[in-house]
Image (tube, rainbow, N blue to C red; front, side, top):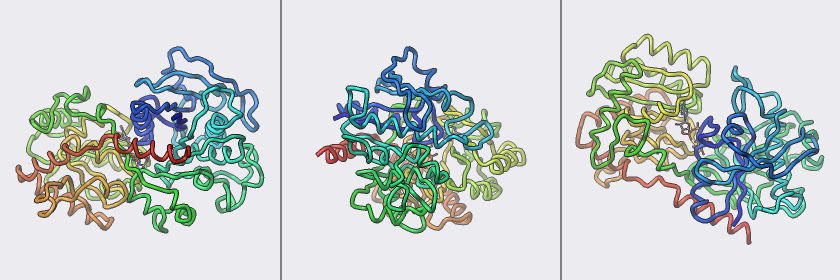
Length: 480
Ligand code: ADP
Ligand code: GLC
């Protein structure tokens, strides 16, 4: 079985969020199951730098609507074959994958990700210059959303899967972009790539893909509703027979408290004593009072309303008064960044904030915090709440999407059943978040309950095995 996995980010080469983690771990899991999977990625400078001796696999001198490009072949650090689209005019620049240094979207994102989609489609058709032809093309999010549309009009096209990691990002561009990117005029209509008079990359993927997946069963239901469908609910409900939610796994080697080079002391479920050394280190590093007893809340997140960060910032004075400490790591919304830093000055010694992206620190927070905060308004899957359970750091989460599917609320009944792993609150708001955080602190003070919660979470199997097999089954069905 040959699968082309097209994506706009892969850890550790280029990462803005969970898509990068999934794009590393899922292909690796498929690869070890014997699937011949190859990852296709844009040639950002960070990616080219990681290809020590790239081979040219193909040249694309004149794809209609795009500058000349070349396909380089290499491998990811874990050995999964990698194809990189080299196109200096579109990818060779500073800044990030989607935005410039100041956080503004690149003005040529339609070309940047149109090219990625186009090459995925060419490789999936009989137009491909390569001998290797995929049985299935697996697309991820809007950045590869045009691939199913291109494939639809290409000769001998492989079937394709459109995986939705976040419906809130849709890749919407002016109407003329469709023709500029070489899409046939006939597809620019509501039964096609058009969305309210504009071109939507994501809609193109959802409309033309042979199968749609999303990253948790609960989110697969939610996106068919007006509340969380972001305008795509009608189309998704219409296509529900080919839509299903497969829960993301996590990379259990990268995220393993027993062998994590970012921690100062390793620990596991049988002996959690090493966790306190990591708490001490985290308190020191973030300028907090070193106090083993005070409950320490941790958060690692993009700073956006999606993640409910505004609520965390709002309740910080009450959290501090519990008493508790709080560590925040993330970046995004400029106002939220300022507020977070402001709180760390105002509550110096009790609140620590680091604005930026720091992989090592994110691991230390998972290990050193006592309680993890993840009050997302919506969450397709979410990885941090799984990392935190694996690190013996029970999460406080809002009952939405993948958070529902991965965290079991602590109650008398769930403690008795033996499956309690965290704290789940229903109605989205500062007061519900605060009362869940208070419940967590009460439980934290009860050593026996706390150990039970920690061990329950650490015992959960969040590995990719089952989910990768579910993807393989979908590919197999599409090949028939
Ligand atoms: P999303 O993809 O919506 O941002 P996920 O929970 O799926 O949310 O994944 C986020 C990933 O990005 C996690 O691996 C998390 O640790 C990481 N991450 C987010 N912000 C930062 C940051 N500032 N520094 C380091 N890692 C971060
Ligand atoms: C998205 C979602 C997140 C999910 C990740 C990986 O960024 O916001 O919930 O875990 O993709 O699928």
